[in-house]
Length: 258
Image (cartoon, rainbow, N blue to C red; front, side):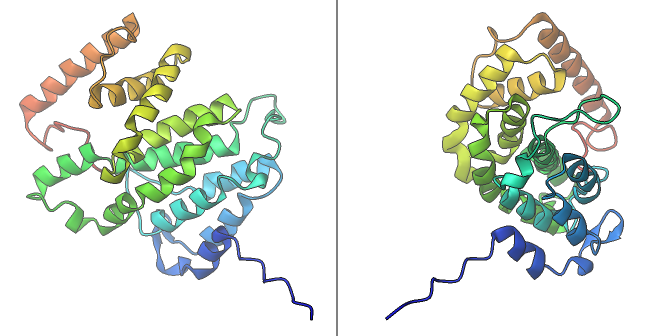
């Protein structure tokens, strides 16, 4: 007696794509009906096509979490390990000779930006304006924050990616995702990666994020700071003190959550 092989499971990214009512979800442009086509092009073997698709599909505007943000984030997490995403990753020269970042780094940067817009400091700032009920007034941000463990699981394997741009982007994305209470056990692991970034990285944004994470997690960063880091930290402290003197929200005591 012969048995037919079991049917091949439908890839998760296709399930998300096909089972989401995109047209009913709000995006910066209005309806999210354009998203299925744009998200599908993220899997094109041509890096130029993927780059153009990312410009369209990775939604975001004025630090806002939209209705469509969560399914887009779920789709991005589901394709981070797809072989098409890394196709041509080491050949990123464009027609005019400029460099194009790897698609995986672009996707990770979007996850980083979105997670940063929904981080604990943003919520704390919002709670001061909404009597502790900020997330009750922003269910889309709440839904994204609830998704953080799932997103982290997709990002974590790329912390050791061969491509340095992908590897560094994964660290920066993992840091705000790991604020979720279920992910605190990963802070020591991420601290080691943050220290690596500080040893090798010179980018101001990257260094600020790594130093900020280590400080928040109780690590001594005095031996990791360079003179530019100290100057940036002191400048930010002076600016923050000035804003606090103006009061919450009206003077932006913290970065406003919008």
